[in-house]
Length: 348
Ligand SMILES: [Zn+2]
Image (cartoon, rainbow, N blue to C red):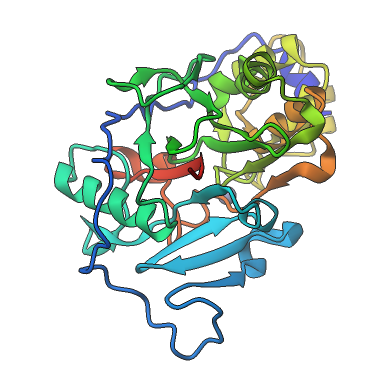
């Protein structure tokens, strides 16, 4: 197991983490029917409802049955099991569409950033929420700080709260998290009608934020884990998420299953690892390399530990770093990256 070799390491490499904290400004309440929206042409598809279609996202999101919902010029990812709950609204945004200009491309940036105008972000948010049919909702975003703080919202908060997850059972509130590599997680208790939105980067994952969100739902609403459905959206994958070995050491100190979430980084020119271990005299080993972390695997494992049923956990396998045509990646694009948004709410 690659990880155990790193645990003996004395060399601590750079921590590859990022902060994508956002100014979490709020969407103005209740907009009109937004007649200026440009809908993607759908005339050639067989649709049930005008201007909306769902198609399987099988080519990119794997066998877990995610669908792509195209509306108002935006492509939104959804989990069918959640989409068919009549009182629920949910969705994960993607990059294309929107009014923000990023390197000559029109993109749907949903987080405030220096490179983008505030009014563009607000317009993108209106389009995203409108595309989900959530015009009556008020958007409750957070000031994300890579913490394990979970807020319970009874009413719309006057100011954006510092924290990385929120829960509610009140209709009309659209809980939101923003990401550009970290894992966005949406939870719904189908029996008690309660929802949660969670932002889990490596720090939040290490602090078990998704378990704490389940715990908060239990405390506030009497939720049982067996009644909870979970959707883990697009995030940087185990293929691309390189972290320092000290991150692996921290996880290993807290989770017995941690070795399964890490993989060895392969450049292709390293010697046979066993040979390398055996031939170097003590004290002359090259510094350990970084390792690859699969954040979704880690969060899935925490959901299982919290009692959520395996059949109720739906994880996208889209990697933000591999799919920059469809998503945003802070790792790959740096401060000029946009932000994706995941939202969930209960209809009035
Ligand atoms: Zn990747």
